[in-house]
Image (cartoon, rainbow, N blue to C red; front, side, top):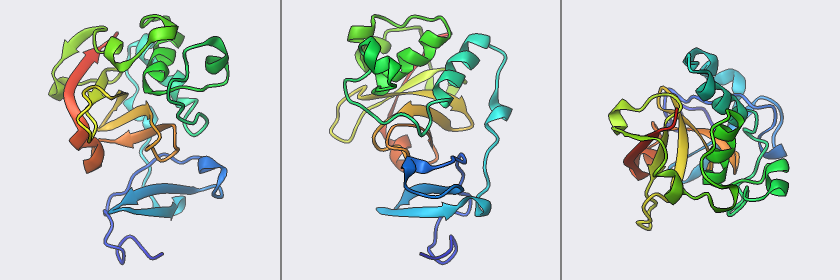
Length: 195
């Protein structure tokens, strides 16, 4: 343990306050990893971003994002999940089925439930340059094994994104930042604008 200063951690640690991360810590603590170590920080010592300030004017995008935000910390990553009604009812998703679920709540159908993948999502909507990414756009990652379009996320704004991944701080649906070198390094520049 220690302080951000004594442990040489980032001076601007940001996060979203959650009631109980992974049902393992008391109210008011968030988790993050840096240099291979797991840290827990008391929420009163962290500057939190107000996610409401990023809200846009496109009602479909806001509906999709709000559907996903309701599952932050409440839905564990489930590879292959989200492809039948039982999984959806029980919030068992992987990254691509989670994106389909979010946009489905906004009335936008992104392919068939039973065969949604990152490879089908990469053909949806229209292409956008990475530097022109806006709230609601989906963007893709190439993992450390070189698997292209191995992960997909929904951009929130100000370098934050919503996604379902077992490496998120919740072990599933969570909010991560492109300010984290690990996430930024794996982005592959592919962005699609859905609405």
